Length: 259
Image (tube, rainbow, N blue to C red; front, side, top):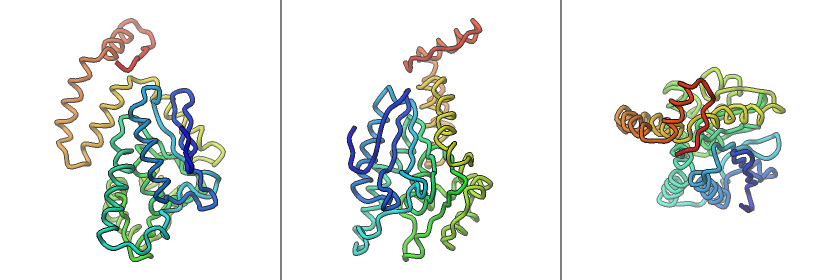
């Protein structure tokens, strides 16, 4: 896969995606969002990919926000369409992907950058990273799911505080409130992300996908319990279930084929 604004590579069943606009602090312009939509679709449909790590180029920024210049003169209708298209094609597509997405936050994750990280299923942050949603300083609100996902992750009170004050928080404080899973030194960021996905890679792929679907159903106004029951039943029809049970009985390591 060849992109202008992303670097993407599959190694040992992990898709590495780097937003490569370091001089622009990896800001999300329309072209970058289109490429992200493409790579998210590729991950979902490619059996070789068992997990995805998204990070930013350099050590200063994961993604420092959206490219404000592109939409500074938008009308209300254009703004609404911008948010809808971005949410459907990128942010919701990541959250609803059957493959686990992990954000490796290597610096500033602001505005659309934090929204991108929150759309991922897990987040690991470098010690120096700063996170925030500063949109109200521009007379806007978060438009790529930020008001919803931040509330889900940290609770209503903290979410309203962060959004209405536009204040950044440190990665250490982000871990305390549940916004990130782990905080590690910069040099250990990708290896920590790999460590998590390498464990997941040992598990049954279809079961992992079913688990993600069930968890996400709980926050998307669906019948989460109903989805869980349905997905639980489907697992019994997979070869991986038979392999997992056989391996357990035979006291050996299971070898899952994703079937």
